[in-house]
Image (cartoon, rainbow, N blue to C red; front, side, top):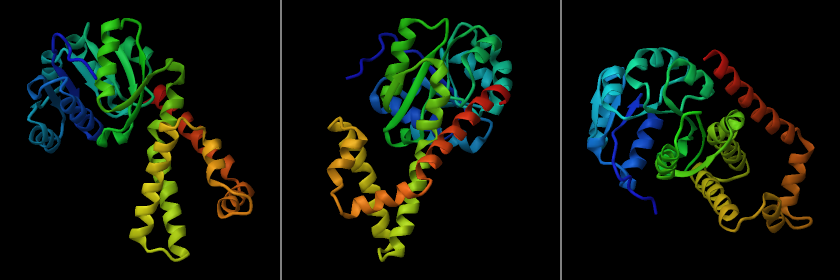
Length: 273
């Protein structure tokens, strides 16, 4: 069970998109903060109205007003917008805890922009249903209390692990981009199942539940993927036939290339935005 912070501080989200919305939902559902302690800014009036209506939080039009009011700031903007935002809030956010979820943006780049206590986070979209797989890295000025706080916030939405920053691009490639990769594979399985006779709705229902059940079985029984494969596969059976077909293709190489491409792009975003 997560503990309530002794002194509740206000949290501000710069950017009120899907990921910020999901994090706000998790924070509120955990009871760590109340709606009156959370505010968000966004350049789009519709986005501000949406989070205000959904959660009863305060919204402001500009980032400077938010940075002045909030004691903890989430940077939930696109990587290409990060430098402009940091420049805008620099004088108001210095000395505060700033948590960045901008993909590829390094702690060094953040800390060179202004003197704040930075934590870099890579969340993922299952945060929308409280099943986030996230990782975080600590900046040089972060305190033990800051780390406990970010663990509480991220833990309210699922799994969170602490990693060295050098591994964050790999995290981005795996869990950051991973939901889209898994969804693509499910889509291909569904289409292939339809070709051999299943209806679309039935195929989707079975594929999604199989994905959920497999993940839960691996997690709860602490199984290695190879152990689960051995549980399902029998000599001369259907699973072996399907796996043998995969092995005859470039499947393994394609997966490696997919992760490597996402990894390289994450590093590129950190350098160029």
